[in-house]
Amino acid sequence: MDGNFHQATRLDAIHGRFDPWLLGAAIALAALGVVMVASSSIAIGEDLAVGPFYFLMRHLVFLAVGIGLCAWLMRTELKSIERFDRLLLLLCFGLLLAVFIPGLGKSVNGAQRWINLGVSSFQTVEAVKLMYIVWLASYLVRFRDEVNATWGAMLKPLGVAVGLMALLVLQPDFGSLALILAITAGMLVLGGVHMPRMAAPVLVVLPLLAIVAIAEPYRMRRLTSFMDPFADPFNSGYQLANALMAVGRGEWFGVGLGASVQKLSYLPEAHTDFILAVIGEELGFFGVCVVIGLYTLLCGRAFWIGLKCVEMRRHFAGYCAFGVALWIALQSLVSIGVNLGVLPTKGLTLPLVSYGGSSVLMTCAAVGVLLRVSYELDRAQRQVARLRGEAAQPPVVDASRTTQAQAPAVGAVRGTSRLRQRIEPTLGKTA
Image 1 (cartoon, rainbow, N blue to C red):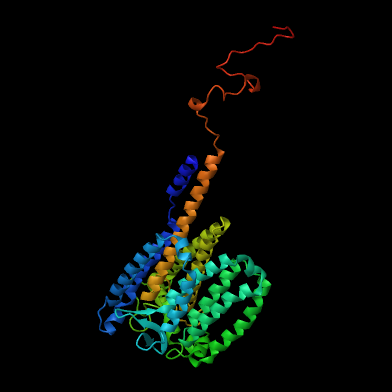
Image 2: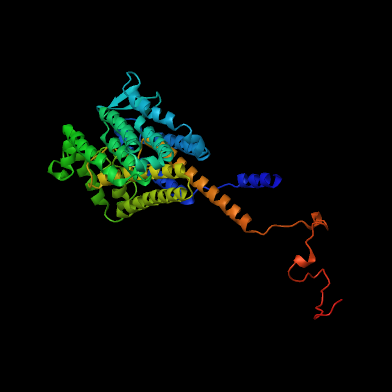
């Protein structure tokens, strides 16, 4: 009993370490974001008469708060987060409904997506993404076998996703709607859902999404203008045309940091949705490749950590890593595709890089969850290695506690002890 107590104490004393690749990629993206927000927002601040460094200072404040939130989640046990999964799901619906409360909700350019916090506005869907991922990860742990075997267990998370998407249609926020649907599908697939059974809801949802996409005239214009933005460069194709001119002007290594022309009141939302176009102009093709490489490292490492967690049967941690990796990967992919003219224009920021308080805060929180997953995975691996090492060692016998009565009989011992006189053979003679 005493030995078991000491062994448990030793295992509890083992600490993990945060994955350096995750941490390094996140720090590099955040640092690049600070530099590019400073560069791209100077002209916007002067046009709005708020000062050239107004958006930079606000971005630094949001980033500092986000780092604090990240540090708090890095030190929070995942099992403590998992306990509140159902409450987090209720908060998802509550936050998406809160934007419609008079006096609390705030409308910008016809979109009802923000709540007014006094000092700043907060886009609630950014918090919903992370809380929904935590709930879905917990659901997949609790109903892992049923999700693969029954229709009901598979359709329940899809029904929750449809409910969230309905509230996003009312805001409207088609970009976040598509992102939540993609995260749901990706996590279900990684959670072991029966693929042929999954095909039926997909065939139903995709036509509905197409109808929603073309229901509003402005969405239809976005879908058609990105095919040839220069056909109407001063109206429907204005944003994309200026973004492509910025990227093309940058060539291989850019025109130099701070030397962008398109950010001077030509490119709309240069510090938020179209910040990659400014990166392409100032840092060139090389700078864009560095950004893509950092996101590849961050998300690839997150998927690898999630896979290792699942292999060690730490399913909740693994599914959380999968969900956050899908979120960051898909959102960065869409943002990069929009800036390069590959995808229709969407109001999605570049995670950790673009200016935006809500996005910066919640992406930092998501990185905190990823780092916590990596910490607990490393700790579990060290504990398993300790147990295997102790199991491989031969038992140590304390000679001082061994009495003569407990000593084995001479005839039962194979071999000759150096502490006992050798018995010579008698060759058949009797003693």
